[in-house]
Image (cartoon, rainbow, N blue to C red; front, side):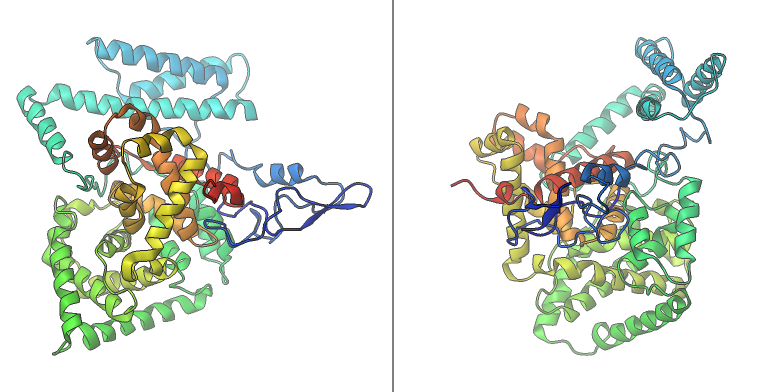
Length: 538
């Protein structure tokens, strides 16, 4: 999936027919500034030519579009190119169907009490099916097989999760398990309570880290002059964990594209941050407004992720206080607003992971074990990347947060056009979009998603060619539409609000975020350049 916008660009542009005559394209009839409309128009290759335009007299717009998505199922790029850790395993349509039947049969027998097959057994079933299929002919790479391959992999991944959960249930003490379930339900019963944020898990680690993608990232990052467009296109579908820290620095604009200047810039910016700490945070005297800002930050930081031990460490809280206070002093038009503290967390986690190693469990990490130099690097890089990241959405945090209010209204109009049934259901039961989507816009869904899913989502946000402020609207729309069936089953205001403020995303993985951003891209492609879809009914 490319980050480039594929929508039409300007009104009144013309196309050339076969006889040389020109006519105005029917979908380009309005060039007014439309809320949510992309600001840049480049095709997937970054050449600046819209996908719908003709490169030559012999090419149609459909051919151009087909060329632009010809590698959509490239197994070298796809996150499912490695099946459950088995490298270079590729199965045909017949083999995948056989494996799927085995999965269903195994699951039924497991739930009936006859024993569950583990992931290794499932993989052996696939191997046997693949071996059996080779007797009729060697497996070929065909377009018709790829959809079945992905479906089979998804079924296998889901079975692994279900197997782990059922085995955990069977091995645990009955009463203790019931108490744990009750505690979890009680914890999620409070409206607005953040979801549990797992910092690492076996499921979460199965992200887009395949060797072909490592090689592509390495080639781009090690080039003397970085191709930023290529880096954004590659990062849009997810960044491998070992590459994420340097990639985020580059995508946020913190590092220059020149390879030889990067280390010099890093050292200078880190020294600049230490000077800012001495000038503002360690100052002997502060005025009344600065004192009020610090008091609010000092109250908010300890309440951030209270169930994660890492964020209760004193050193971590002090680092967050310095980052937020200096950012507020340097941005007087907005100052500190509750919710910005959540936006520091993904940067902090990514740079902490870089310092301790990609395989280290951050939940058990003690910041006191790191050197002062390592802690300074994490803090300064988090501050500068946060500053760059918030530049395009600073109107979200000015007085009265007008930017968020505008985006909430745009979300309401967008859902009204996309799904009138859901919109009327919410309106009929008195649910206002501001009541649930304000937090989505203010915290960029960090309170709705597990932390590792937020980090994966920000891979795409940072890679968006026209800034993520526009794309965030369509992500929120796709996120709301994802829960459509559950929302329509709720028949009162209380039930709707409890669901919207405590959406069950605690078991989400990177694959869920991949589907979410893909749907958001589809909505943006469909509605961003269609003005009538963002205008209220007369």
